[in-house]
Image (cartoon, rainbow, N blue to C red; front, side):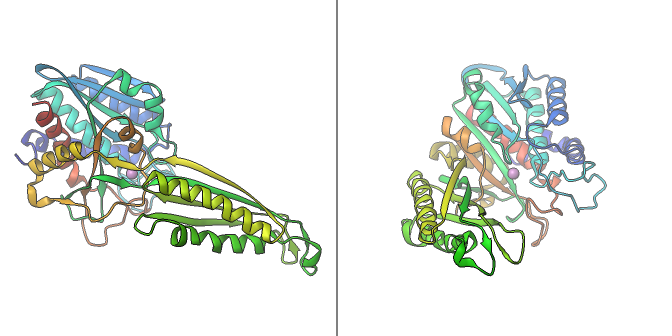
Length: 389
Ligand code: NI
């Protein structure tokens, strides 16, 4: 069973939805228009129940199978856009300056809508399918807010599934992995305080710029010297701010950055060593360092059994030859992680490359590849039909 014929039949319709979302991108928790259209379409498809206003703009559709059954699964898509100025020049480019669907969440939403339309029409399964449209994947953890508002108590599922389009992988190739697939994410904020002085008389002050330079260098030792060598982690200082004039030693310097890891031990270690290193190195120069380590997303960890189900559904749609184990996890973050902490599930990548140098996600020239819409929609639908057979 390749792409469902019925889903292929509304490829043009899904493309129109996707391009409409693309032209009207909305940032985290502001997906009012997108959310309204999703809810309207679900109702028009004859979905049994449509619940709105979960985590502000989140929507859940309830689809019951033609055959009775107590089992249920969740299928999830994200709806938010990014604060990027679009440079595609496409006829359906963003109409909102500085906001852009640069990660393909417009495509994910259209795919899941396509699956919902098909499932509401055919209902060839026993039990319940919940289609979950979540806000704020990119920055503010919309999945966590939905969970905190009782997502899985109101809509209990045995498994939850999601996917992300991947322009760097060959078109139509599904990539799976057991265990961690995306990294845990934390924001780093370090304020180094010294004592301001004339730039010509450094001996009269405490130079936070010099201390900051040493802190930046020293924290590179955490991954290379402290982390278990076969574990993985990243500490990147990405922001350096301080000073107002050529000849003035400032009072403070601010550093910001990001940390990534997969295992809880690595996260604990990076957090602890970052604070120790920054404080002690700053102290060596007479300065102080105030370190904030803000955990944003946990690691996205696939359940092995759910991953088998996800792979089987992918193979049913695309054939075994186009389902592959991803060679390594990604250091990117993904807030589907919060759902996978609560419910065993699986998150796959779907290759969408048009050419070898197709722009990557988060690039101002990126555009979701509409040819992938029926593949993703068929994967979602196949999960429902196979797991709830
Ligand atoms: Ni994304």
